[in-house]
Length: 98
Image (cartoon, rainbow, N blue to C red; front, side, top):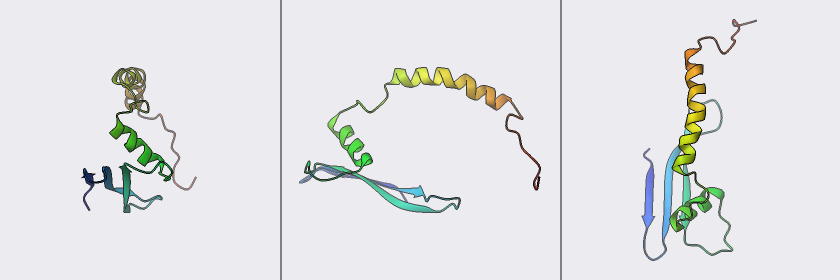
């Protein structure tokens, strides 16, 4: 199934994303989930993702990283990741049944 982004402009502004996500567990099964942000009554309970999408729509960037923060983070972690890729036996494994 495809993922969808729905934009409702009039009469009630909203943004809804429908996407396929992996179900919890080891099986490779998916389910459809929805995230929705809309102009809403302040007493209405919304979940964390809806709240975050609403903040994006309102231009509030306080919950998001700036580009320079992301860049500095990669400067720290990229050498670690490269080192792990170069090491062949950094995860100790044991033969089956032992």
